[in-house]
Image 1: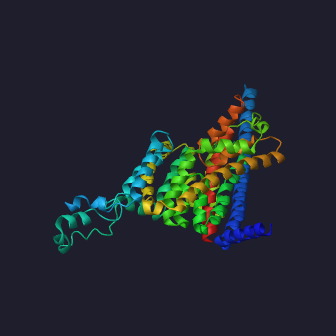
Image 2 (image 1 turned 135 degrees about the vertical axis):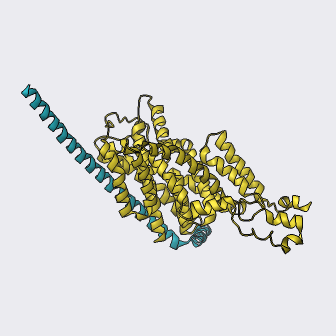
Image 3 (image 1 turned 180 degrees about the horizontal axis):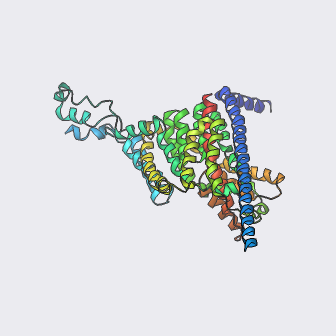
Length: 78
Length: 397
């Protein structure tokens, strides 16, 4: 049992020594920062899109209300 | 007569192997219809650049030929040595079209932008989050690439295969990675994009239940989007991406430029040209140019095999990322989303959307998910371009 554990420890150590731990740490950092950054960028784009739609719908409602008012005036005049 | 067999004498074992690889790519392009626009030119280019003593690469042909034909006379009059070090046509195309300013992949994005309709996405903007999280595979693959021995820059260029987008992969790999990895990265990216209908379905089934796959989205009607919003959308994205991820602006900006050509309504000729002639011309040249990086001695390495495995990992985790985020959104959303559409966040447009729709109809022939999947798919196109810029910025510091 001790020899098996020792073997696993040696294997683990040799795998770890083959890995550039500095680069691994940086890769982890890139993972965290990258996912956060894309989430923030997309959140801003989504917010901007909702705003665009809101102002566009508001402008459309004003235009429709104006048209309705003109139509009502015209039919009243007739 | 020695000059007639100079080519045979200079042949190395890697070159016939690369001819075989080129032929396989051509076969896949023609017989299997796998991304033929790229794989066929790359396949033939692979054969061209792996012929010894030709003028497609650095050495001009007259050098060895003239020395062989005229011997010392050629050397005495120097006309056989002039062309040494001169660029062949494929090397010239690579230096001008890719190395100088990554012009070819960036210009290609104009055409791609002109092809995209952002209507389904603008109608339901929150779908864009799935496009963002479907880029998970890129970052996970960077970590695995470091674990298998790549340095950080090379690992990031391998990870970008997960963008599932050829121009983005080429741009990032060319900017930050080792030059000899560009060829394998490009081949793997385009090959896996063509294999999306085979890769994605089993992964989607693994991370979803039957009940989830049967979910309908009929209550979420895709409303028509006002023209002014479709015009302002690409401008807004350009400004936001430019401010927060400036290194992505080359790709995102040109993508949005193409989209603006489409949506403005006054440049239909240019939009059609961008979607057809521009895309076709650049794709034609890009394929054969990329083959410059498929020289046998650089391509046939253990690293290439690692890239093949890591590329698959990237696509798998992209799919998982998109689907799981859709599940997460369902916890907070009244209007439930079929989580399969999250898988369409992979940037393989429009294939991924079609795969998801087909999978949905397999479960329930009356379930129509296509337009929702298209919305997520186009968001993945934008997100992958932004992530490409982010990767460059994070790696180069």
